[in-house]
Image (cartoon, rainbow, N blue to C red; front, top):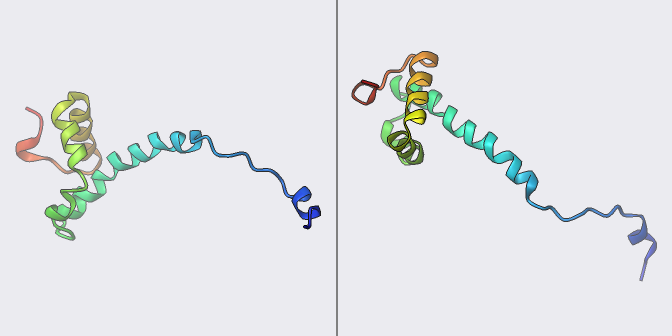
Length: 91
């Protein structure tokens, strides 16, 4: 048994999952913000709405149940991407 190699390797502690947890807010923000480019691609006819619909079901649910989320998405799509949700818009 060769023990000299085992003695020189650095010990890597097991991951606690905290690193993955730290990425969660960033991934959530990227998901929400991806709705802008996705809506623009639909508006331009590059991809169909039915293709994206399943991916954004959680976001649509959040918009229906949380007014701040709905207001943010209306603002984001309208002011940043110049996309207005028509019948789903505010008011």
